[in-house]
Length: 260
Image (cartoon, rainbow, N blue to C red; front, side):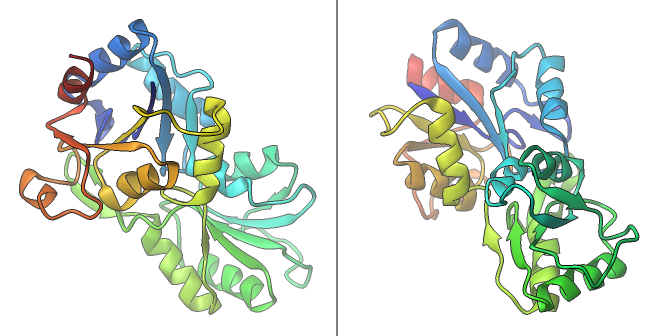
């Protein structure tokens, strides 16, 4: 059975592990379950995401897919790309063999830009917005890692990459191609990484947000396991679309529910 696990709201919240999540992942490993961590958070490099999980005692080596990696899959080697995002996006674009350009740095503004890639970052400002919009007005295509409007922290919801994407798309007068959950680019990466051409009956996506994790499960034709340790509460869960196949308080209780 394959388990596709979200991170924020499933494994950790505000950088601290959610009760029982580490033990639940270790149980999945001990029972030989196939496991992949998939996150829409794009700011960190792949090794940094793996290190966060390793710090909790979890083996994450080559088991993390980020929305930055999904976005980079839509870039062609040799293209010139404005990266309106964090180091994770820059790394992924460069790994694809493209040139990653920081819109805050000096470069020839009259030279052609093939694409603008937007990812979560905290130093977004008017100047970055203006440079990206100019490139889009000159026919660069717009790719975003995800359109999550917020992301959960221990202190509540903060603006997510969807908020940044909305500003860039509006200023550039274009629609963004979305690479991360629940869209096809990341779904293709997941299936390729799992070595699957078709889903198995019991494969499952575990997440706290139906609009990303639930719809990803639909895209993959996996089951959807909703946990209430992130942004969705029990009252809201009754009105969700898509409806989850199962609902649990957290990952630990969901693993117990599935494996017994």
